[in-house]
Every structure is written in C-alpha cells, then in structure tokens.
Length: 66
Image (cartoon, rainbow, N blue to C red; front, top):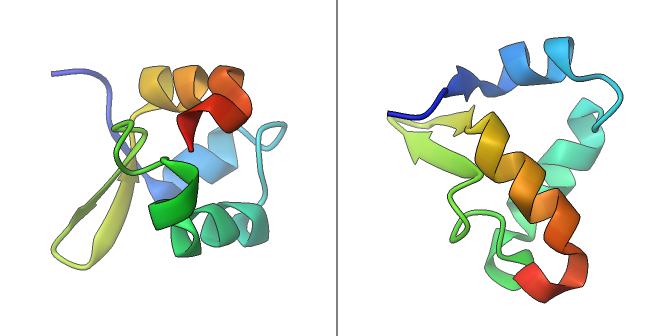
C-alpha cells in the first residue's frame, strides 16, 4: 500500500503545497477537479486521508485531472 496519511498530518508536513482552506476547497469540489478519482484523497469513516505520491501526480497534472 502506498504511503497514506491523515489530512492534518499531510497539511502539517507539506505547508508549501496547500493550507487547510485550500485543501478543503479541493475536497468540496472533488467531483469537478478529479482529486478523489485520482486517488490523491480517500474518505474513510468520515475522515479524509491523503496519498502523497498520488497527490503529487494530481497537482502536476493540473487541469487535465478534472
């Protein structure tokens, strides 16, 4: 299994990627931006988790992920 971390852990360890508000915006708009279908984020038992390698891929793909 790829490295997976809680949303809070990811944000604390990658402050140069996004802040909490930006990440929440991406999650809120996940149906249109492709972040969830890419596997970059996963919801389990009402908590969000981040897969850092897939998050990196999603970020590098930009608008193509949508």
